Amino acid sequence: MSDPNSTISINSSALSEAIPDPVDQTAPGDLTPGLIATDVWTDQMVADAGIPIYDVPLVSVGGGIGSFVMADFLRIAGMPAHQMRVLTNLDVPWQTYEYLTKVSQIPRRERLRSDSQSMPDNLWGFPSYAFREAWNDKKLAPVWNVCTEPILNDYYTPRAGQVFEGMEREAARIGYWDMVSKGQVRMTRRRYGGGYFTILTPPQGTSATKRIAFRSTYVHLAVGYPGVAFLPDLQAYRSAHDDYVRVVNSYEPHEHVYEELRRRPGVVVIRGNGIVASRVLQRLIEDRDTYGLQTQILHLFRTFRTETFGPTIFERRKARNGWIYQGFNWPKSSWGGANKVKFERLEGEERAAYYKRLAGTTTPARKDWKEQLARGRAEGWYRTYVGTVDSVVPGTNGTVVTRVVAKDGSILEVPAHFIVDATGLEANIREHRLFADLLDHSGAGLNPLGRLDVERHFEVRGTQSGPGTIYAMGTMTLGGYFAGVDTFLGLQYSSLRIADDLARRGFVQKIGPLRSMSQWAKWARHKPLPPA
Image 1 (cartoon, rainbow, N blue to C red):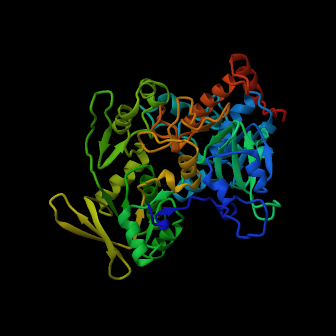
Image 2: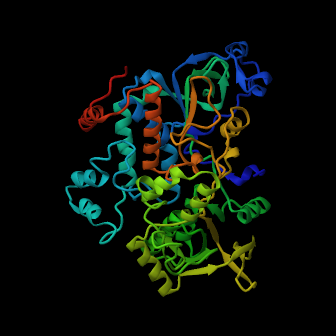
């Protein structure tokens, strides 16, 4: 998108705001026009620019949960801590993820959409989150839940706080904090003779130069989401009327919506029918029940399914009242079953077609939440509309009017005090400066879904430089040979494949049965790993 306001920043706090390019033109060590225009750099070119060079075998760009999981796997595989640098502007690996969950109404006490064995802090998956919760709370209910899901109970999912606390504990055990270099990564370029230069803009006042360069054999990219884009009609309204109060996105801070509704009765329009929309609805309904509010909820669907559908008996999805129900964002066999095998076999447009066949906006079928909506429909304060949006315009008395085109072509005007965009659309990969530079200068290409094209072991195709290579994982690789990349288990699977490839190259040991058992015993006793 050309409009810079069409993408919402997902930085998690003022402490981790994107570090801008330095404005002090007198400071030494900056990128020169020659460096920016050149695809492959020599050591002398970087030295002539006055940029100090630091050598390290592997750098991980991002510093989020992907970088943390990769570091965990490699440390368990025997890598000394000093052989990897994590380049990040985050304070903790889960910072951006916690921000996103918090603003989308999943605080630490609430449960995530993830299963019991997908644990970023425990590559073995045992003991599971359910077992650990049962042990800590001295209750058998979590274990009973996983034994009877999804027939007698909803899928067990861990509390957000449990996940973050586990990562904090494991980060201390593996020496993660000593592997971090703070700053904003500007670009990664291939090095003449092999390997890469990764340019970091350090925080102001922490370096004698504007930039520093890390010279490495391997680069690991785990940047995550470049941003979240608004629906076009809502962005057009915000831009035209400078209204950032009544039209909001679920992934930006919008607590003022709930506070205003507690002060006076109001009407809210919800756009979207996925997990985030369900959490926003749950928050609105719980506030309504807790504070005795008169909030009216109008839910706009573009498509409204009422019965189970699917091309085959093995690919059918349950749908009711406009919602499509699925425990997780992909069928479970996408992580370790028939769908995983099929994705690995398909190429090009056939793989893209299969993605389209299995993809879609879904939400878990939670009994308590379904009961809330059923009550809202019966009492008349939760109503649904079906159609496409023609435009969004200002209304009277401080309202915003959504003009909806119904199936028969008629226009329905829906006034509301607030509109919440919970569609979760992602920004284009090129909106992230690092990825745009990688595509333009380092030989990277796009897969059939428009994300980074990676091999089965998550090596970015076209970026090889002598003995070195670039790996990528996470949401920016969606469309490759593994579907569940943007999940805890997906990050672990990606890290395992990358670790195995690095073992093949001689960088670390392969995690075989004996090493796995001995390292699990150390994990269970929380025994710190030696730094070297």
